[in-house]
View 1 (spheres, rainbow, N blue to C red):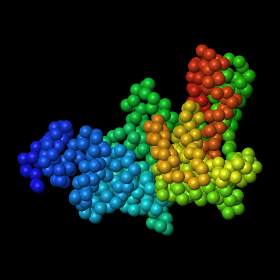
View 2: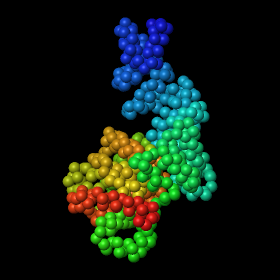
View 3: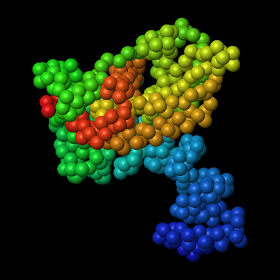
Length: 498
């Protein structure tokens, strides 16, 4: 049965006007007499999508694709539905079918590239080629530009601003070229849609390229637009290249000289606040135990077994095994080597699989006391912000998933989902930050030390006194004291004397 032009025209008109309920009533009336017409199910799926009735829309699209498996609009809508609802549905076969049928459909290329980048290792080159081609076909497809720029910014390691632009032996873009390409994309986006996120990303790329004056201009433009009480102002001022954070607590303390010693001996609220601020600052930069590369074959069998099990579970989720390492401080604490198998993911950061020594009961039961821990290695811009905030955005170790003998897929998927949620919150709170994905164990070492220092600053900076205990002990004096500590710490971070 073919639908009359009048029916098609009326249905399209209602959908175009946003009257999805009216269009659905019209289509349902026709379906009652002709339930096998694919075109009616297609129109019905569009109406249900507009009404956010996603489950019913999936059923309609399934009927359409069963009858017309090469109907590109239905394939694209099915992919969009899966992406919008974060459905556990493999969209790659549908997107590849679309590109076989319509090789120059730019949005399908972008969606396929995004899917491949989410899977991680082994797909980056194809994904970047797809993004390049989609942008060449549709220069105004800003989401594709943004995805390409985000990936280049995240995978480019820190460079010297004077370093040469070179290409490695595999023909891949150098770190400097990645940053310049990302900056060009963000600048194009800013010409068409000036969003806060694009401004912050562009400023970030400029800073990493050593072009501080241009970055400062972007920060100044942002500061002019927001109010004095805007919560983002503190972050923007801290990221501004004209007020770089200090990096040496000892030299800062020495600069205070006798004034610092005299203040610390006092009993005034100002002296108390100063003492707390210095403790937080010094704890943040105190060296933390590092990592040591190890050969897994020399470690206890139960550790090797767990690491291999985690590898099998994490690799299908897009994780790349970076290396095996020993956490020195854990080895000293436990009295035996503490193996860590380290995995990386281009959009999630670092995951660490670690097995604890099994007890006698666990040995008898054949179980291991183990867990996988996710870390979001955000840019250094937020490091001191971490030490001052109540939430450690560098580490989601508290969300670690404890596993039994074989880590099943479902818990790991839940952990990955939770990691994305926490990362999204961190990026929202600290606009302009980027994710640092280490390329090797040496690259991870500095981040590992910084992350452990930040955790120690949270837990031990105030002589092991928690915020709740301080509130109880100080009573009404807590709030003004807290404000003083915050102000003094800000001055320490910026290298200024109070």
